[in-house]
Length: 186
Image (cartoon, rainbow, N blue to C red; front, top):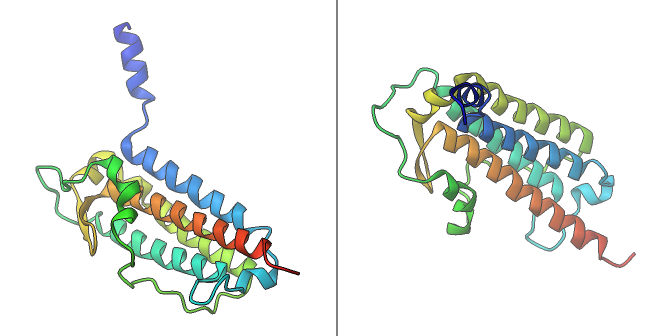
């Protein structure tokens, strides 16, 4: 590869933070698509006793997005470190959910998001709030971080990866609810 080719590749390279943001945005878009064809009855139906409805799952996702945005937004003014913030590898982030069975309880759904279109709008707004932190940039986000109550210290890039993994995990939960409801007797 020539020096010019390397320079061109570097100019167009996606940073870790841009890639994490793109992953989050794709997961959010897939979530909206997954929910868009749900009937009003199925939207609020509980697939089994003690299991969340799709409306409750999306409400939880939106509340969590608001928490993620709050964490990421604080990085604008937080002190930078001279060393990496996290001891986790980026590749571990998507698998953190396998380490715990219960969330910390900071984003429990109320069960009041019964209107599908309003819930999707609120989810879209919450996802846009997370994506709005994109202007912080890769270098800024690698030297700033915050601790998660269950998983410990994560830098800003890892928080964005976590937001993407969280969104995809709960989209899978919505898909599971849809499958259960589709299989019930008429």
